[in-house]
Amino acid sequence: DAMVIQNPRYQVTQFGKPVTLSCSQTLNHNVMYWYQQKSSQAPKLLFHYYDKDFNNEADTPDNFQSRRPNTSFCFLDIRSPGLGDAAMYLCATSKTGVAEAFFGQGTRLTVV
Amino acid sequence: AQSVTQLDSQVPVFEEAPVELRCNYSSSVSVYLFWYVQYPNQGLQLLLKYLSGSTLVKGINGFEAEFNKSQTSFHLRKPSVHISDTAEYFCAVSEGGYQKVTFGIGTKLQVIP
Image (cartoon, rainbow over all chains, first blue to last red; front, side, top):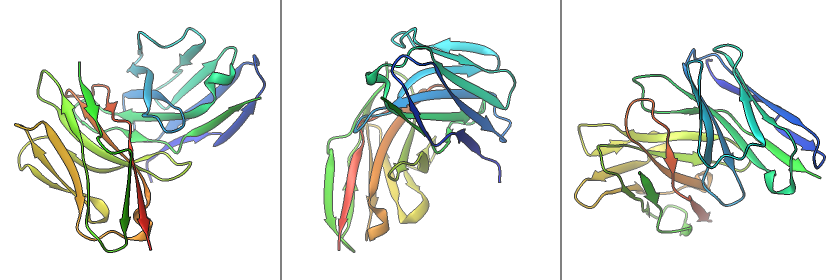
């Protein structure tokens, strides 16, 4: 089945140690998103790629970066994780002309 | 800018009883509206969507929602809930095309046996 896959499902990282979360999709969608969801809060958009064009939200900290080497893969890099970055990170995809977004299962990040 | 308000943070309901989860939105343009469900430690799954046409939208798992433009609402309903419906439900809006989706804060539905 076509889907959005996030790896790993659970990630523990040390305070200040760079970490990378990955997302892959078999839907051939041209738009990919990264959301941050803290406990009991709404998912918050960090940035998205429209094809190869990177679109950063104005309030996304510089600590968060992203790479999209090809259509299928997208990475979220946290350069120096702080305790406040502990959250569920959700990857989603969509396609121009299709309104809905398709989500992966998420990566739960713990910072120790 | 678009925004979504979910009026109830938690809704307890007995099994087989009906439920309504409320959602209001604001936007300066025409919108697409969605309801997503999230089970613990899982991603978001689309329940239903309103794009245009009939204001009553039917989704998966027996859920439905009604778009009311004059009241800027998109309330989610189910006539008879099941224990397996216990989850968090997010109302969301986008302003068309592929555009980014804005989520409400979520409503936790707790179905009581």
